[in-house]
Image 1 (cartoon, rainbow, N blue to C red):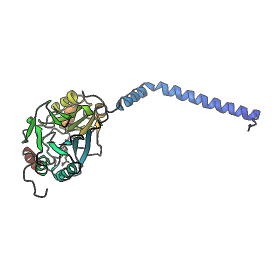
Image 2: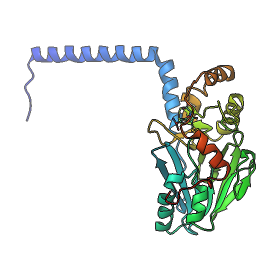
Image 3: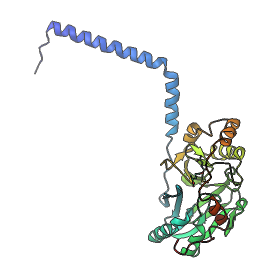
Image 4: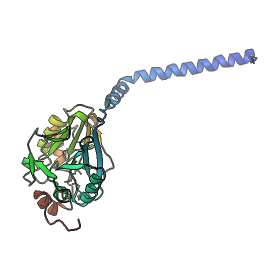
Length: 292
Ligand SMILES: N[C@@H](CCC(=O)N[C@@H](CSS)C(=O)NCC(=O)O)C(=O)O
């Protein structure tokens, strides 16, 4: 089929094409005049989305949550050997965690704390009872009891996988960030939260020390490392080094502004602090209710 185009229509079409072309040119012109900022944002966006490392086929990862304290726990395992570790378990969730570990046919080798928590009682002590053979772990500098005490750069093995403990003091003296470098992941405890950080106004909190820990030890990890905190209060689940380096509203400040901000957070103390800290000093094995 052919369409008969009348001269007047042809004229109209030409006019329309010319109008579209000139507005497109104006758009391109306007978008290129503000393109420096746009290009920077775009480039950042691209950087932000650097490919993540995929987990190796023999690596198991499960993020678990305690609604009461907004705490994340992390179950990691070697799928071949079935050896597992659990990071930052919560007392009230210990039975849930033990059941999951049994259902998956895993053997819990280590139950680790990133630090001596102030807002909940650790589940490590109770898990030792529920899953005999489990070894409780915390940093040497935490001053808390455990079967195994870690120092900076020390590693623990589960199957062929390795977790490396990196001292990141500031929220407390004994805070550690746990790395599984092969998988491109780090567990930051309360040192670095998603778009935030741990408070520094009790235990041995020190905001300058926290700032140094984040800038010198966490922000120097590869940009695409996925970061998993011990808490989130807004529903976020994970972040990356790249994101936090650019968008963390506290840690993108200079050190003096950061200290000033941290000195003026005026947060209420955690509700459980008077029970949690003494209990966690004993690895959570303190006044555990029979049916916890
Ligand atoms: N409301 C909660 C405690 C909230 C809180 O203080 N969280 C700590 C981590 S647990 S010690 C924190 O560092 N928060 C940083 C922040 O900026 O909120 C409760 O009563 O348990």
